[in-house]
Length: 401
Image (tube, rainbow, N blue to C red; front, side):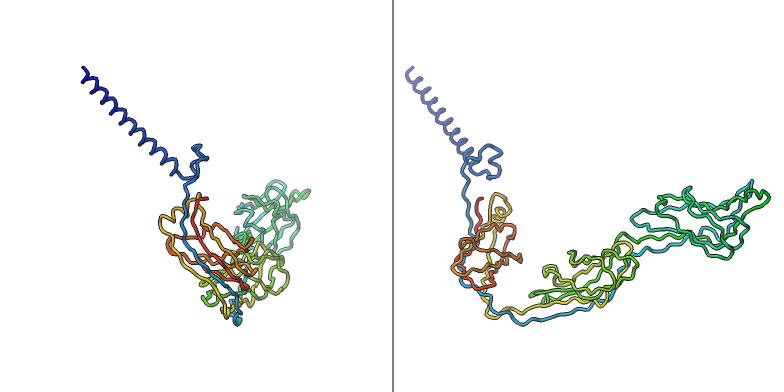
């Protein structure tokens, strides 16, 4: 009996030990999950009070020292002539022959008018319309023209005349009806008033599009763009239309000029240097409705400077591994660019993977998050200054926010 009791006690003790081990393993797993969960999800789970897991990865640590602007080299000027162009958004004429010959007449009892219909594409491209015809024979009375049941012309016309009757724009709809008739002979009940017409045309004036566009393309070399200081488009604008209209110029999709030129003004447009690029460059001219302009003797002028003499810069490369790249993309991490200044008051220019940055020191330090400028693999950074400055520390570190 005593042996059985001891055996049962040992079994219970072993079971309790095994249960404690299982609970301990579960607890460790929970703690590991809580501690390793990304910070941005802790608040959603009510765990924002937990301290973050400290992560630090130093990508770059250098002591740049003295930076100086030096003396600029000689200025070089490149001038590219472009062909003269016409930017035309005047409405274009389109004539439709309605009938080669027609007799319209009216007596006290009978009437023989001429009717036809036409459509317009829409107000964004439609400008105006008119009816043109010749009078061959006239048998008395007044010729009457109506548009959409509204009288727009009534008058006696001599034979052998060419007649142009504008159709009022405010009466024109998407679908329209024109009626040409003759006035009644009135008390002359035996008479027949008539007009014999020939070559009757409906003439519509329409825009090709709400905005007329002409593109010019010019190619620039790496040498012209690398050290660019100034870019300008020069030439002359000649107004050809009766009405002036808004004229725009875009360089590589960037608006650089907008005006409503009158007469023949001189054109001189400064272009921000970052709008110009090596290789093909697009200059797009656009004019609104009713405008027609000649763009004459156009040239693109580029001014560059050679690299500065006795210039001191600092340039370094560093790598971002695959694991570090995951942190760079994670919004819960920052990529701190940190610099300290030893001497000088100038701001510092930073080229980080071809991204131009310019920072000023605050209390002798700069601290910026530059995750958006980093890239997987090899990265390059170049430090320059417009005036002499001494930089003590340069570092880029991935860390928790």
